[in-house]
Amino acid sequence: MRLDSGLDETERLLAAQDTSHWAALAQRVADDCHPEQREFVLDPARHVAGLCGRGGGKTVGGRARFIRRLLTTPGANCFYLAKFRDHAERLMWQPLKESFKALGFVAGKDVIYNETKLRVTIPRNGATLQLWGADKPGYIEALRGESYHEVGIDEAAIHSNKVLHSLIYAIIGPRLVGAIWLIGTPGPIPKGMFYDISRRGSKISRLWKDRAAHPGWKGWSLHKWSLKSAIDATRSRPIPKLVELWEIQQEEIASQGLTDDNPLKRREYDGEWAADDTINVFAYRIHDDNGALWNQWDPKREGPLAMAVLPKTFDDWAHVIAIDLGFSDPTAINVFAFSPSDPSRTIYHRWCFEKTEMGPQDLAHKLIGADVNHEKPGGVIGAIGEWPNAMVADSAHQMGAAILKDLGNVYGLRIEPAAKGFRYKIGAIEVVNGDLVDGRLKILKDSELETQLLTLQWAESPRTGEPMERKDQPNHSTDTLVYGRQLITHLISAGFVAPTERDPSKDPRSPQYVPPMPDETADDEYSALMGDDYQSMLG
Image 1: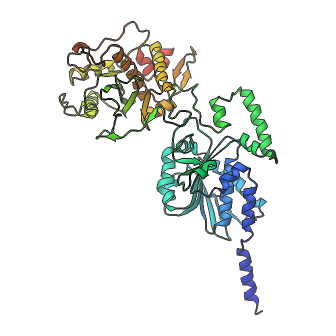
Image 2: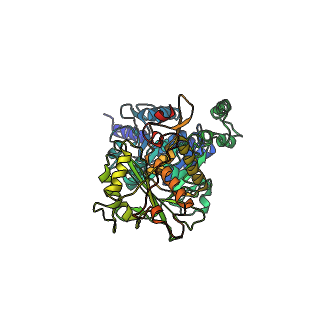
């Protein structure tokens, strides 16, 4: 036995663990990126976000961050999340193998791939990367109990707000010892955590290029780029794959006739948030073009029902309660307020509620309280602080007329029947959209009404070609907005909310009030449009 055999074995083990040349490999990974991509890869911030158009190389940038972390951090624990497992395989797993091969790593020796678990391990330094899809049951809870050095969430716009918030702040955040990044293309609905981070004028992020103006910044570090900006940044050394993809995209844009203002082009190609105003029923925008709040408001809530607190600007607030009756479908109740002294006639959404299987008694108790005390009402009316100026509901629901009659005769709740007619509905939506465009409607953040305003889209009647709301999308709260907005117009024009003497028989707050009968000359039953079956009205 040779005396120096032990030394030879020690040298061999040390050689096998030598990673001194990996720093050069990590630098090579960054150098292979285009300039904007490289800034994202080298960003040292704890929270990093990238908003990109298609083909800009956002996932390539994420892959580069992972490789650099695996090479430079012994024992690194890294995690990548895609929407589905097959997305994780296609977007990250296979390209990651090709990248390590290009760096000279031998599969099975220098890098170990577990195909079943989609896990990458670097034996020399013990660093690992786990890939998952958000469709994996229980994956969120499985992430608890570990510290993480690099976490990447791809296509962040398509993950639910609940998932993102839980991952970033409840599960990953408390054990994050490195960095977490979100990357994605803007989605069709400008809402959610990724939108809040990457939108223009965001208060929780600052652009990487503006970092010098924000010393000590602890929020999100935001990077924005597109394929066009990547092409422009590499004019001196063109990247063939980018140039080829750019030419293909230009042909596609031309074939579809997409203008620079087209929402699809702005999202998919330019990497800008833009809602599909042409197909959405309502022109709701959370923010204006400068990033300031426009149609959304997030006031303080108070009381057991968490009623929104109105601005102190005026003290003569008038209220309307609007109801969309349902049973198997939800009954929706929304409260709106405005001031007759406000020259802008801004309408504030104060409260939103939806629940299935509500009968007349349930509805009455929700509105006035279980004691049905008209002198000291509870429920929604008590939370408002006074009787509303008017209440309105869809009277042509299956049992709508009977329900409204019971609410009036049994519980003393006089509720006007909603107007009727297809042409009325289209015109009423136009009025609401006018308020939205002008910023005169303020809708509660994260309410069901806001969700429906953002998502409800037009469909086309297969027989008439007329626009109609899609049957597969809920519209219960948006219906109440249409009812309530039209009633507010009536209250203002009739002088019910003006500072003048009121006729008790015309004042909805008075016991002597007599609700007007529906217009019998209307062309169609309003409920046929506002209820569950739009096709029955459109033929």
